[in-house]
Length: 61
Image 1: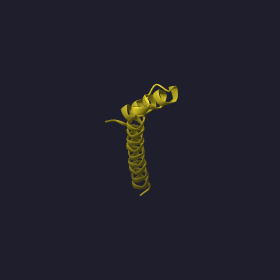
Image 2: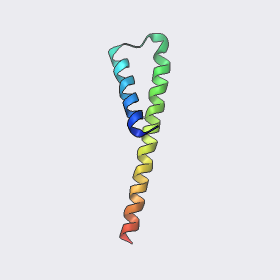
Image 3: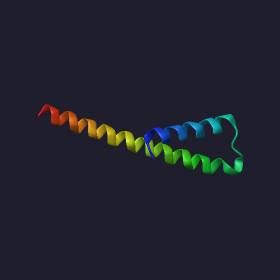
């Protein structure tokens, strides 16, 4: 999964929940999926930041 596809899914989940389109029986599952997408995106951003920092440090040497 890419960062972009995860963000798209996260945004769709947020819209569904904000609009009240999620039946109460499915709300917990949707929230869990949203949390997973958020964790995935955060991890991707952290890795990208670490790679950029490493490249910048190598460039300074």
